[in-house]
Length: 427
Ligand code: AMP
Ligand code: GLY
Image (cartoon, rainbow, N blue to C red; front, side, top):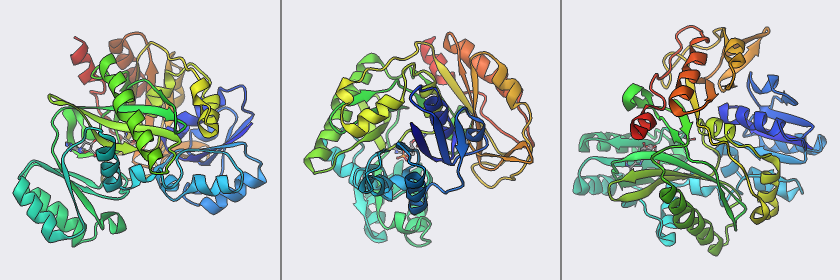
């Protein structure tokens, strides 16, 4: 088979790496890919942006691609899967209507209410004055969310009423998120520990993956500004067997069934961002795709071939599929450009990736990298996801950081406490 992977982050490198292991696959194209995908077995980069659906479709037709796997949310919400299916091409991921689950927080809230999925209490507003009145009435802490896709930057967890008011001013007066901010969701602050629940679905059957936990704040001890994710590990001990089962039975199934009742078949990945609170577990948000960086540690534990799972999702035969997971934990430490998530310098040569990769149980996934004159350089905020698979969490964390220490470029930064929360919980 020939596979096209759409996207160019750490998630997409992990997807190419996993797909390349399939005996069913002869060739993989990554569009646009990154400095790591290009070096991966069976894989070459194609210089087409992840959101240029016309060009991707033309490429898939010319190259007779058998299956396209879509990584990021933007092309999904723009309807890439609909466009491919209309031409008789197989594409893994939700169609445009189903992808609204991630692309509109107000839509996701309405589905959760109809499906009886526990989530934070909220209000939905299209104008500044009533939004501000709601904040005054509710008080702080409170959470302000732009409705649409904002590359993870649309959420403000406001500790004070003033902070919430400024967030609303930015959205409505300064138009900080454009069309994505034409509506806001204001919701109750939930206190607890977060975890990520990911599952494959064909719209009828749910096949869960192993649990994981992201680290969104930029610095140790969850301090500093929010990022796309500074590291992740799997499994997340906060997700007990009981909670895992609850997430499948009381969140994932009611979700796809409620959407189906509204005429929307959700095929692809369900990603539920969970908050485990003293008063039970609630859904913070849904994503309609693999998480980044959760994909790196999660797929590192998948023993089965992933390609038949993708095909079963598109063909609606997921009830016939079983998958196997490695019992051992995995840890991914994200190495970022100096300054990220704010502005940063690009183009620095990165040393030591091959040395890190040589360590047994270590795989360095690229995110914001490119190859320039034969050298790997940083081109994005999140640059590498150094992923370790070991025996026991403590050893695995050590192995990941041993690999991290071998890698260097100017001004890089990373968190030194990835996995610490899990260690604490286990001890
Ligand atoms: P979201 O994009 O909705 O996942 O929000 C991004 C991040 O904001 C989450 O990962 C949480 O850390 C935080 N967050 C979102 N909603 C809430 C909430 N209701 N209470 C507390 N924190 C939240
Ligand atoms: N790791 C968070 C996300 O992929 O949205």
